[in-house]
Image (cartoon, rainbow, N blue to C red; front, side, top):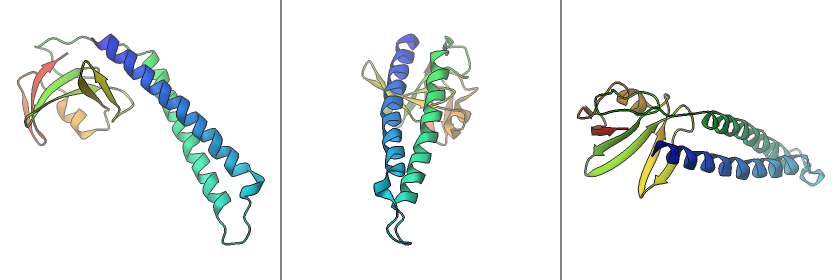
Amino acid sequence: MKTEILGKIRVELRDRLDRLAKAAMEAHAAATDPGSKAESKYDTRNLEASYLASGQAKQVEDLAEAVRIFDGLSLPDYSMEDSIDAGALVEVEQGEETRYFLLAPVAGGLEIMHEGAEIILLTPESPLYRKLVGLRAGDSLDAPPLMVLEVF
């Protein structure tokens, strides 16, 4: 199951990288276009386009790094007795909902659909990631209120 999920993550990250790289090239072209030259001292189009191009270039770098990391990533298998750690797919009950989280090294917040279930990637920067690490199936948290159902 994790192999299929990794495949879906890789495809989604590559698709996002392709779209973002195209947008970054367009922003760069707009920033360097002679038509975006300031017409007065109050005209900031060129400056704004430059900031946009710079920000998008940084996002492209970050996303390319995420693609590289996921291309070399394999996720360990967990049993019901194991405590949650990096690479775990965690099924939790939160309120009346069953939710799935994958503890991943990068791409936090990415949502992947797998067999009708939404899986949300959590990274070590996430407070929830840090709260889940070390828990086992059957353990619960008060904030946010949830119970760990299963660890894969």
